[in-house]
Image 1 (tube, helix red, strand yellow):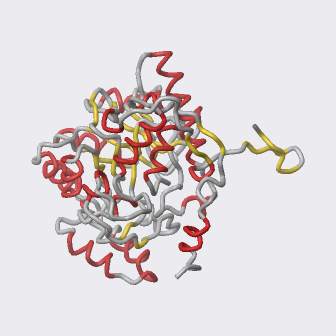
Image 2 (tube, rainbow, N blue to C red):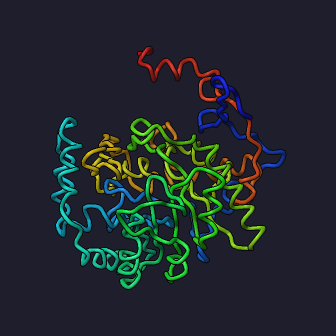
Image 3 (cartoon, rainbow, N blue to C red):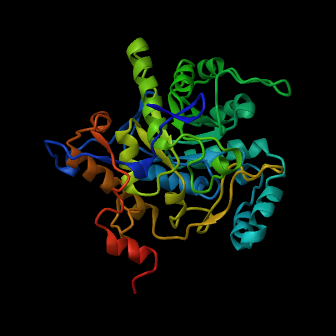
Length: 386
């Protein structure tokens, strides 16, 4: 539904995670008996969790650890891991920097050229552990870096930028043809990011395996503040999922929708899948793991842009192991640990036997859902209770 925001100017109402709630089902299921597997390009992930291609979240060691727990971590091929052979000292320098100097430092560190030999080296490091290897690059470098990663043994290739469309216009550089890229590569390709039905449908028609949905919702991303663009995640996911369904009925090719960003708790993740996602890509929640390379810090992928930094280094702290964050036991009561347990329990309570059924869950508009009856919890968070 559209409303007038001025004379002859309409705007469509869009919704975020804090504005909706999931309705319990008529039938409930034992949480341990629900199926949370995620389809992705002809393969199946045991759990529908991907770790964001951000340097403070995923290094080769984290990717290996994530794979052993059933998830998939995406390594950024344009980050410090392909610019520096000894990246541990770089990570330490970023972690020790003051908040005032952090953005400038990161910009400076990312000026060093990418060493293409390190691309193959990082892929082989991950594959040596016999798990899945997923890597990412921006569209301008997708063909070259994708070929290097594929030859080194990568399993999944992600082409990611702040806003991705099939019809990109540029004179300064060669525009990548996503349809040719997906056809040429022998491994599944995930494209992103998008937030609208039309763009999602056009991207699906390239033959990709998955789509990343989300522009600017991440905790370390400042795109919405700097550029003023974005669509709240619930509406964005629902619109893109509708495009997936249309394309699937038309062709029989299923393109997985991956909600990317804006999810800080298990509840947000459950709402993402209920809105239509097949899986989620998470950054800040995993940046808090002991295995994360950021040492309790998390920074955006767009930070290195010298003239317009759209990411910021934030302190998220270290709250537990990756296994505790995914599987528990939860030692915090804020919904940031045992994410898989939260998803299973939510699915059981709404009566969803699998991810596809979870996508059909009834949703209500409920902006007061997080504060209704929570007087003392809210007061405690605001520091009003001792």
